[in-house]
Amino acid sequence: MFNYSNSGITVSSILDDRRETMQGFPVKIRVTYRRVRKYYATGKTLTIEEWSKLADTKSKTLIPIRSDIQFSFERIKMAVMELERNGGFTIDALNLRLGKANDKTINVAFQAKIEALMKQGAVGNAEVYKNALHRLERFAGVHVAFDSITVDWLKRYEQDMLDEGRSFTTASMYIRCIRALFNEAIEIGVIREIMYPFGRKQYEIPVGKGRKMALNLQQIKSIVTYDDGSETTVKYRDLWFFSYLANGININDMLKLKFSNIVNNEIHFYRSKTLRTSKEKKEICTIVTPEIQTIIEKWGNKDKSPDNYIFPYLKGNETPIEQKNITKDIIRRINKRLKLIGDNLGIAGISTYTARHRVQPFCL
Image 1 (cartoon, one colour):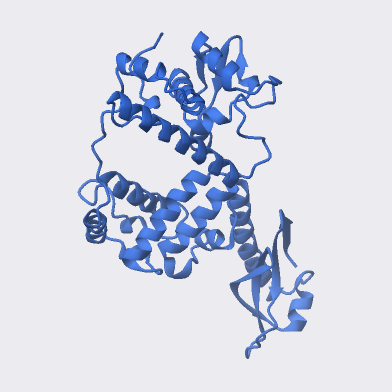
Image 2 (image 1 turned 45 degrees about the horizontal axis):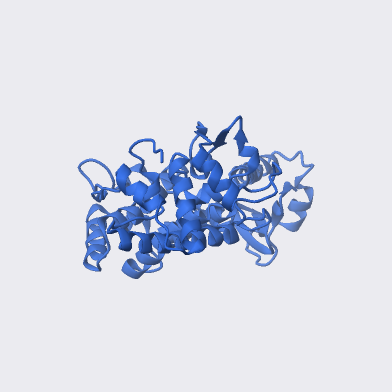
């Protein structure tokens, strides 16, 4: 009677004739996605004859029933549409949105979040949540109810990770995932705000003390002029230097730069992460210095068409996972060469991350 269909998702009100009761058959809202069906009760029961008349009925008894069924249908349809707009529809996500997650477990919330992030192409963030879920399930199992996660539980979980040899940084990263899921669950009404265990006078997430990462200018000069006669060393050294010069651009964003990003001798780009997480998108600009131009001419694509990537690692037809794997491989190669350079120069801890901590402009 009531139907909605979009993007492979179908929502329908149906008479569930699989099981008859004394009053007739239950009316349910059926959601179908990728051949999986999920049924949601409306609390209404009708006979086959009553169901057949319901759409056009003028019966004072049936009209309120039809209105209640429509209300249930619209509630589920709106939840589906909201998840569609956010690019994260799954049956688990819908269950969570409707407050019908399996015993309101955070495991289901994790799975829904991971699927949503993968669908958005946020592969790196999805990996963080996967790792956080794996670690949580090792500690507490595969059915962890939201209401079982208390201040004491979080303290014991933190200590368990530290006892295992994890750093405060890793522990805080995994626990921040839990906090984010609590915030989302409260926002959509799955759990009550009184269950929230985070914040002042409750559980406060540990903050690891950051290491000093910035290099001084003399160290940078010794790195960018280092040459052991290997073209591979020089290439990955130069890619690191490009990252440093381009306002500390991360390697993921660097590999996505196209020649169209160069306008009036400036490189303009947005950080991929902030495009997904910030309402206000801040454009980053950096001047194409002679050093940057030299690196592009030496290691960049020879075809400088606007739609071509500056560096020849991505083709443009990769899936988000393939793109992530290519980026990870380039980061691994750069870091391998930087370690070699650091060992020979006596400079510890050089990495792609170091290039993102600039103390001042650099000129050779």
